[in-house]
Image 1 (cartoon, protein in one colour):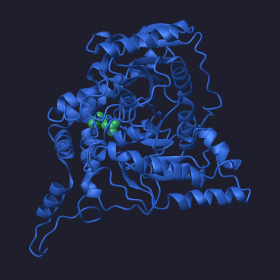
Image 2 (image 1 turned 180 degrees about the vertical axis):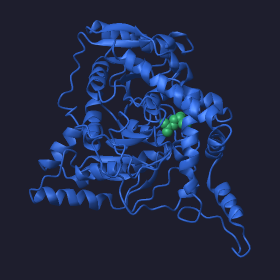
Image 3 (image 1 turned 135 degrees about the vertical axis):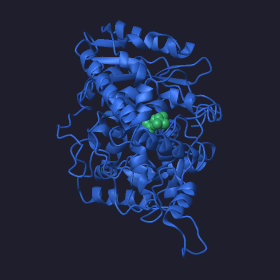
Image 4 (image 1 turned 90 degrees about the vertical axis):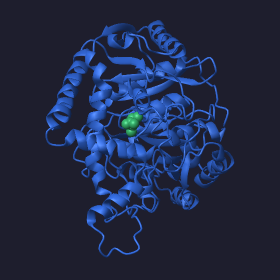
Length: 490
Ligand code: GLN
């Protein structure tokens, strides 16, 4: 077994049958982080207890205990997810000293199945961004070309996974933050149906859109991880009571007779040539495998980016109000607090603690929610969001899954879009509608640009129909022209 490229079941089978110890597995990947991450900046901190945690898995195995589905599989976790006794910064200065006293449900469930947590992964500040350039902890580099962005906001997760500094990673997706970096870095990234995965212990950005999900190297590993982290959690009232199927066991790349929807309104052009070619090849591939391609209309997708930026900023402005320097987080320094007005205290703390993009979103969101504008912006956005969802539900009466590009182009250069926020926001054109409608969506590596940059394909399914989405992704994965290609930093 080549440990660097081993699947989750290969690692966990080997660990359980004592062919290799969980500690040796963890140490192998720690060495990779030491050797390679200076080129990528994907880890923001490492878990000093990782080897001890792995040893604990080994001693439980020695005692004959059931250590779970992911025994000894090393993971990196995005900075948005709380990890007990491990710094959780959300990529922000304002949480630079925050050490949670508890695990998020996602992390607790991974640990319960024997996962070793190797550390925390860099991201855009509060998950606001598409390039990982808004992080207080510096930009992350794309392992396929270190002059390019890994995508965002889960850029650290995507880069670490692509370079195989870990066996698996977790990201979060509010408007595309799992799928876009997965596409840019040539890995598999899944945003589950809203409510599939508990949000307990995940730092809130936009609560009606946020979901965590796997960013891994194969559809099978994604299915397995999703099984582990999904399911009802009494700590999150929006988490669904629906039973969690055995997606990994039921995985099938047989797409014969499936109807693959193509959104007619997406066909207006605007894609770069390599992305367009990859997309049409993916459709042809499925057709050759026996699927039927059908056209569907979801015309409200035209408004997905503006609706998203009204809803997400409004919810963010409310969620981020808690960072006031009093209860927790960074506090601005004052020679003495005597005579300092509370408002000045807040202004200095938040002024210093938040970066530019986060401030821009707080201002936009506060404006949307202000009396006099609330109905015109926030209420209206909610209404159009509802129409968008209804159009998707109607479309899924005529097709099983929808296939689309993930982004309009492969990874762009570091610095290329930082001074143009609107151009940056347009990165989310194919991903935000999935979050707004609460649907599951994923990116699977399929093609490449002429210069060798990876290009993913997005598969979207109806609510709670992750199985069909994963199956179609597995079919694409099996036939992908880029199968087996590796990034430069690996
Ligand atoms: N790029 C989008 C944004 O900046 C999506 C972020 C996300 O999914 N967390 O809001």
